[in-house]
Length: 189
Image (cartoon, rainbow, N blue to C red; front, top):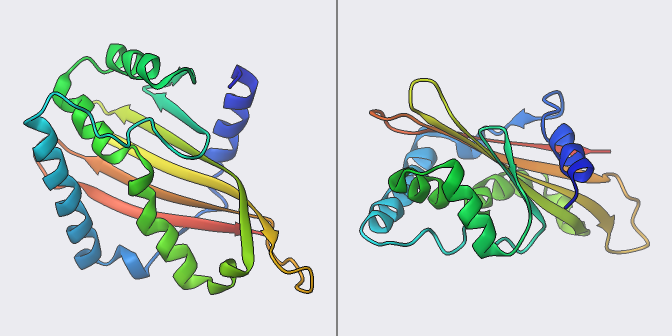
C-alpha cells in the first residue's frame, strides 16, 4: 500500500465526530469476560516462542501504525520483522499480537448488528482494518483496532439507506491494572 493511501486510511480513521460508543456490549460483565479470554490467550503465548497466528494475517487489507511508524505491507514475515524492530521486548510483542487481529473486532461488529439489524440487508465490500498501537508514557499500551467498510444493498428492490460503516475496539493495557476496553461504531448515510 503506498504512502498516500496509508495516510488517507489514517485520516478517515481519526475522524472522531462519527463514532458512537456502544452501550449494550460495554457492560462490565461483557468486558470482563472478553478481557479474561484475551489475557488467558496471552498467558499461553508467553509460554511459547510464537506470536498469535492471526496477527498480521487479516482476510481484509490492513494497516499497522505502531508508535507513529507505518509498517509497510510486505509479506507477513517481513512485516513481523519490522514490528519486532519497533517493539523489541518479546512479552510486549506477544501482548500486542493477542489483541491486534480480527478477533478483537468481533464484539464491536456484533454490537453494530444488534443495534442496527438492517445491516444484514447489505453486502459488505472494500473492508479494511487499521491497528494503531501506542506505548504510553507510563508504560501502558493503547491499541485501537478499526474496521472501515463500504455497503452495497443486496436486493435491488430495497433503497440504500447507508453507504458505509466503521467498527472500533479500543483497549488500554496498564502495566499493573486490569485492561480497560470500549467498543464503538458509526453508520454513514
